[in-house]
Length: 65
Image 1 (tube, one colour):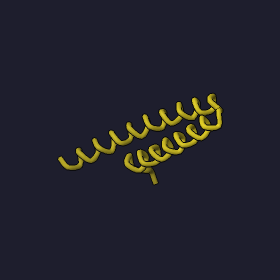
Image 2 (cartoon, rainbow, N blue to C red):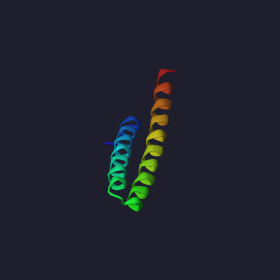
Image 3 (cartoon, rainbow, N blue to C red):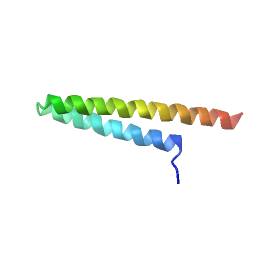
Image 4 (cartoon, rainbow, N blue to C red):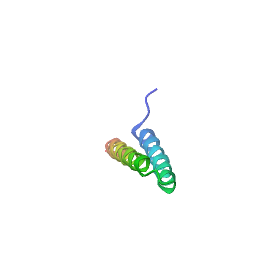
């Protein structure tokens, strides 16, 4: 069963949060290259979450018309 845009947005928000935590941990350990890559990944996940949130909002508005 395909996930709704809302479910996908929530999934990517969670992935972004996890990547941010991992980046902070890596940075705290002095592993700046890993921290940078994890931060880049977190940004990518956040962007995807935004896109799915936008789609969910558009679908919700369309269903109310």
